[in-house]
Image (cartoon, rainbow, N blue to C red; front, top):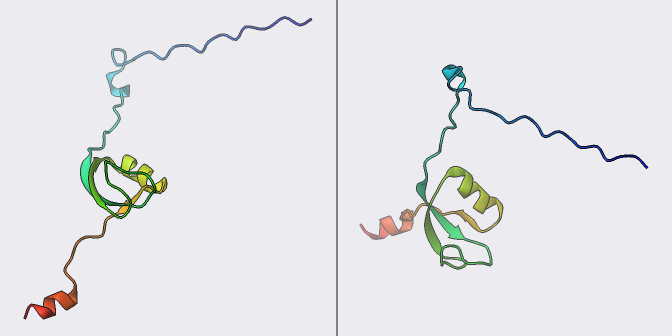
Length: 89
């Protein structure tokens, strides 16, 4: 019967900033910002149901994840229609 071989664990990655400060990299953090969405999925998003508008403070990655999952779509900018402007004359 063959013996089970024990795999050696990979070496730990050490912080080398003391050895070579130039090699230290910092991840750029994206700032969250308020974005407007319309809920399109069957489940509520931040207490809003399908067809309602919701403003969420998200990063681009978080917003993309919600959109790709089908929960929301970016909200259309609320602009007055041309017909409404003509009626105001």
